[in-house]
Image 1: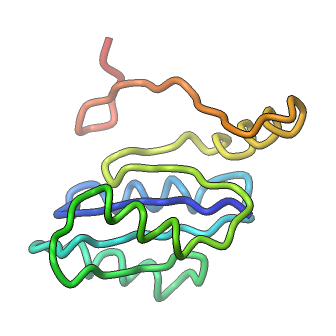
Image 2 (image 1 turned 180 degrees about the vertical axis):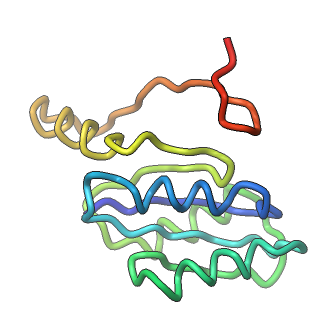
Length: 128
């Protein structure tokens, strides 16, 4: 299993798209752990709706804003997967991201793996 770690603070504009990009992965053995870092917008409600529908989505709420590092570490402590993947709350993954990285890691006996990225605007259009 892959534990996807997502810290989130006031991410209502993008968090649903981010979550859907994990749900749409071709590799399905994952858990998504989102730590809401005391958001003051609708972020917590949006994440709750997803976590109520999909048991692989775990939501942890920080009682006060402690920062991204603390939120990531909180999620890592809750992780149950053999692998950890980091995904920021305003990022999206292509559908085959996890499958491709796991295949690469297993065939190369790699302990750590990273990938390149594409910059997109708020409408999801590629930036040159």
